[in-house]
Image (cartoon, rainbow, N blue to C red; front, side):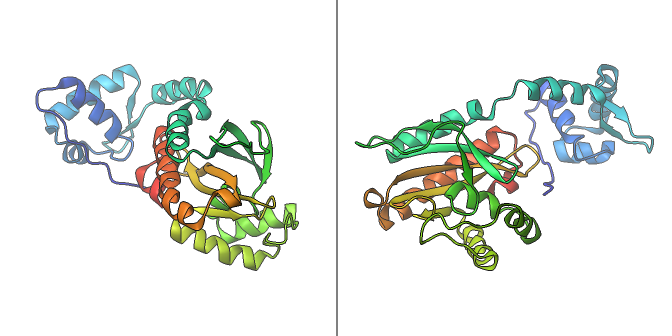
Length: 261
């Protein structure tokens, strides 16, 4: 999902202007368009672009415009090689844990399942039977359904064909059509609910997390015993889960529209 970039630059700040132009060439190629998007004069934009070309952060596109240069890719590669999504999510996960008191999880999709990469145990006299490194099914968990809801129907059908839809509890959705109808509801409200569908007596609320490309990466959830999380609690804390997932998405570089979709 592409967003049109508009940047307000503080007058007189050469660094702000250079950074604005650098960011703008991700979406705009002509000097005139970059000037409009950033509010920087055409002459200044042209001068900045010449410097960016010299540094390898921009290059002529052969049609009178400019495009991102190879040094951006080199720098991005170095950053991503050290990039730890769990570390980026830790702050939002801690806040969610503090506000709800429930066990909080962050899981990342891995093929046809998801894997917990972070967990904070709830402030309750019991512990959730989950651990970092544990895999979870997509069709019957809150994080899993939050992930599936961001895929096309064809992708969901393909996942189901490979994994099947085993009934983990009497409440598990075990038909593809039933699951697809349910996922439409998940998309509409912005979060998924595991209503004792994976483990009897356990309730979870999850929301999707997106990566820097705008694709679903995984999700965040809160979990508790069903007797300890009422429907009113779900209504109260679901927006907190959605907000935390959005914060993590933005920390991972997701475009804002994708984080809200």
